[in-house]
Length: 123
Image 1: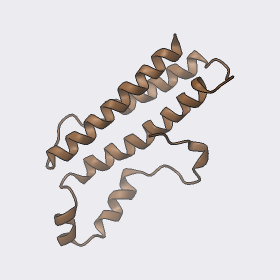
Image 2: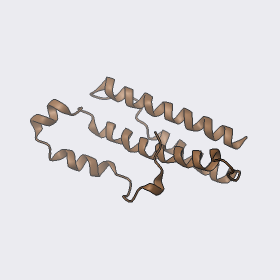
Image 3: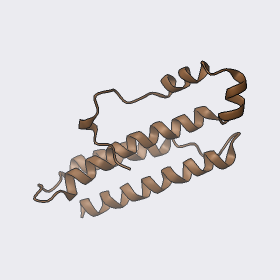
């Protein structure tokens, strides 16, 4: 649920990178095992990676024992970045409606959780 970015030594994946690898899968396997709207699901996954990193930052910054009070300007920048990610969330499922909808609702839960943490931190 959290991604502590300082523990990562690879750049964040891009949707293009994932989709390029999926092209190499034979069509018969792809039609059997991959959702028809993989580009939407990959975007959701990339979005979740970024949200997980934000969640870790917020928890480290605000909820660590003996930590300094978080800078409200930093929290507001994070909130703006999170809202920007949220605006990129697909609004309606395409081909694999149930799977895509599940991912969208999962991301919505993340947004609400992080928004609540930010609201508490700003108080």
